[in-house]
Amino acid sequence: MQQHNVLILDFGSQYTQLIARRVRELNIYCEIHPYNNPPKNASEFKAIILSGSPNSVRGENVLHPDLSEFRGKKPLLAVCYGAQYLAHFSGGKVAPSNTREYGRANLSFIKNNETFFENISKGSQVWMSHSDTIKELPENGVLLASTNDVENAAYKIEGEETYGIQFHPEVYHSTDGKQLLENFLVKIAGVAQTWTADSFVESTVEAIQKQVGNDKVVLGLSGGVDSTVAAVLLHKAIGKNLYCIFVNNGLLRKNEFDSVLAQYEGMGLNVKGVDASERFLTALAGLVDPEKKRKAIGNAFIEVFDDEAHQIKDVKWLAQGTIYPDVIESVSVNGGPSATIKSHHNVGGLPDFMKLKIVEPLKMIFKDEVRRVGASMGLDPELLGRHPFPGPGLAIRILSDITAEKVRILQEVDAIFINGLKEDGLYNSVWQAGAMLLPVNSVGVMGDERTYEKVVALRAVESTDGMTADWVNLPYEFLQKTSNKIINQVKGVNRVVYDISSKPPATIEWE
Image (cartoon, rainbow, N blue to C red; front, side, top):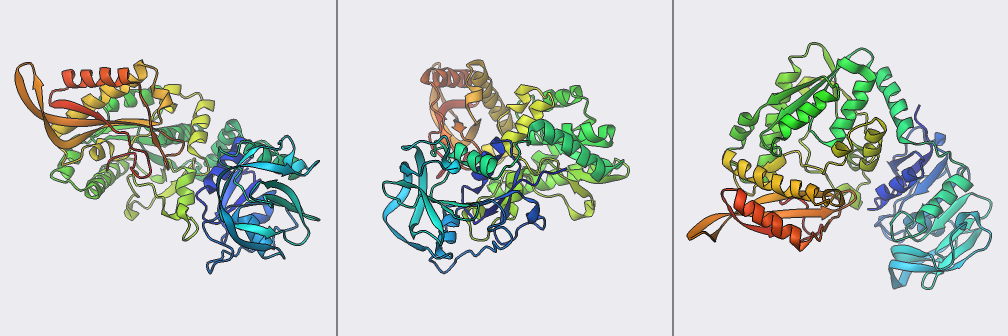
């Protein structure tokens, strides 16, 4: 049974998903819903959090939530926009700030003996991000904390379990942010800390058995963490009624199709490997535009998957490894920044004519939780620690038309780079790494001969969710050794460069 613990109402803040992740880190289940479309069972939640927003409560585009179901009836925490909204429309006053209230600040005053600030000391660092400020507290408002620039940094409303803060406890820069959330959710709202990987596995297996019964389910495996954990959960629930299809699109890493297939078989999964490399290379022939490449790969995958799925009699369900950020983005608040951040590395939907019902066992959890769930089911740590790999594979790391020879070159380069990271103990400190084959030839000298061959770029980034990323400062010795190996061992490459751009403005992939 799902635990309806914390409801986060989203006003379009780029940090909303972070609030949910911090709450989940406290072993508390929470859900994000748009402020203007709360769930039907909203009354079953034990506490409510209002997110921040890029909008202003003084502007024309005020986001007006209907709080009548919660306000004064449930513990409520209003963050940034939420706090300003409560003040502005409940007898307080919000005005433009004289100083730019953005970035790190420190609490200069904390009201004594307040459960909300238990175990948080004066001087604690918080993160501000707003252009408006609360000049006067709402009716029955009691000041709880200030910074040097922001007098009304935190308040509560007397007679209600309603709290407002003008800083963001969910970002890492707020050093006691997690403690504050724990004080509110556990000590004030009395929410049970029972959301664990083990409890998720147990309740999900039960839910799948109830949902699917004795029907057959088909799942396309990619070799990635999400589809693998989804497969193991489904296998736990329905055993041999799960039919997995692992398609080789010819754009995977070197030897990956055979090694991953063997790994899946070793896990006891009912899996069929389909080598469709030629079909994909034919579909890609002559295409240079990244979007056209993606569409060609997506269409070819759908055709191959559909052919295979039709060979299984009486399939009723299609399983997908969708995770929570995908779900949140598809119902995001109109106009909020979270509405514009879209995943563009997935293969895309399957055709309507398949007429299969959808089962998505991971759709309520985040990437880091997927890994914890996998670990609790005993999956190989190496498999769970795999870097993300784009759905279109090496096709979007070859910056020109795709040929078998270019794929071979990039597979060799990528293998040297990735294996080198593992050998030197660097792999796990990198979020994602890969090589790009550039549409550039450069002059080189090998022995006494002049060469005119390809340039490859290596890329390694650190990130928590892929939305922002910094390039990794890999040791010069490692880069030197890797470059030498690539140039000496990979025929067709005579120059290696290292990408030192962060996201934004650059993306992680080059296409």
